[in-house]
Image (cartoon, rainbow, N blue to C red):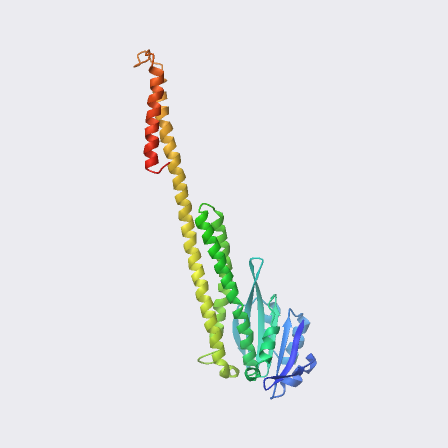
Length: 321
C-alpha cells in the first residue's frame, strides 16, 4: 500500500507526485524523491523496481522479508534493513523496514510493523536545513525513529524483571518464577538479535570507508550507533541479571525444600523413639521387666512422652521445627 510519494528540493517539499512520475523526478539533479510503502503487494514492488531501477537481489530480499538487519551496496545504491519491535499484550512483535537509497531517492518498505513513520516525515519537513542533506538524512531519520522505539521496550523489560524479582523474594518457593524468568529471557534474546546486527550495520555508515552519499551525514549515524550501544549494554545487563535471578531462585527453592526435609526428619525422629519403646514393650516374652507392675503401662507412656518432648525441645532450639 502506498503511504506517501513526494519530491523534495533544497530540503523543502515540492509536491506529492504520482508513481508513474517518479522516474522523471529522479532523473533531475536538483531534487530527490521519498516514497513510503506499507505491506506492499508484489505488483507494487515490481512498479517501484522499474521506476527506481532497483537491483533485483535487493527487491527479492524485500519481497520475501525476514532479513537480518544489514547494509548492502549495489553499485551507486544502498539497501538497508532494520527491524522494528512492538510490545503487544506482553509479547514482542518484530517487523521489518527495507530502505532503498540512491543519489536522489529513498524508498522505505514497512512490513508486519505497527510503527508509523508519518511523524518522521513531518519532523524532517519541519527541518529543511537538515532535509537538504538529501536521502542520507532521510535514512538517518528512519533509523533513528526505529532505534528510539527500542528504549521503551528495554524499560518495559526492566520493569518486568523488577516485578519478578520482587515476587521471587516474597514467594520464593513458586516454580512459576522460573517460568516467568525464562519467558523474559526469550524476549530479551529477541531484542538482542535485532540490536546487535543493526549496530554492525550502523557502524558501516560512519568512520572509515562510507558510501559517498553518506559522507556528510556521518555524525548522525554515529549518534544512532551510540544509542544502539547503550541499548545493547542494557540488554546485556538484563540478561546477566536474569541468569543471576534464576540461580538465586533455584537456591531459594532448594533452601525451602531443605527446611521441609528438616521438619520431616525431626518429626520422624520423634515418632521413631515412641515406636521403638512401643516395639520393645510389645514383645510377648514371659520374663519382661515391670511386666506385672501395676503402674508399668502409664510409666511406659510417660517415658515415651518425656523422651519425645525432650527431642521436640531440642529440635526447636536447633530450628528444625
